[in-house]
Length: 380
Image (cartoon, one colour):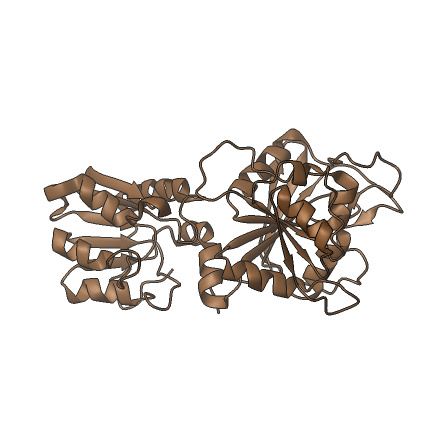
């Protein structure tokens, strides 16, 4: 728990209750706030809710401003519960610290400090200088999980990468090649896991796969939740020789939301794909024409992509793990055995021991969901 130079975080039920409401609002901010963080804010005066809101990038106002506008004069003397430290610098909008001070807020409870170096700790300090009581750390773990991608981008300069896969009990992600029909996705897991994956897609800025997965499964890789999002889900394909079929589901559904990275782009092929709404970028292959995933992630960072979910085959997974590019694992273990010849989760490398942080197991229908961090995105 963080409370830098602030008062000890009280553990009263009221603080916990109102912060939970702010966190629920912050969850509504997912997919509509990127490339900004997902933030919720609640204003409480004399035990009653007087204002609340969450950040929507398109509407510009930060969560605190939305709540202050709703509260009006009732913000004076209120406590603000905010899931991320209020900003103290001018960007697309003015600093939230000054708005809170001007409104006469008595106390600010922040779940976590801001990972942005322009703010980190300074927002709370500015409020204290103005005579506002501050507390940090209530609901910290939940608030941080909502903004792992923002923290990773701010502190480490690259997108937060989650490797997601359905896995058999013997560590395979697909049956032996040739044993199932080509061109149709093969699902190891049950409907509950598949529904969770759709929610995960909704919460990410981009999905990334390799051309072999496209050629084998012909996936669409879309967000089918129907929930609002500010930017279309970017579907990214690593395709060094630009083999992406023109009749694939990805191409047929492309609306400038499919991005193909290749190491060589024949003009006619590139023009055909681009005429169908596919974006093509050429990156020189470093090893036998293979595209550098590290360079791809760097390019996505330049495009303000904060989060990438890897839904790929064994070779891409292996490369990403070997190069240390994965921040989090989410594996759905199905109660099946695929046996010898099945495709491994990380194909073509001898897996080294990985230090897993905060491992969690949960039951998801007939499957077991395992998640763990490979590194803490809140640490530079």
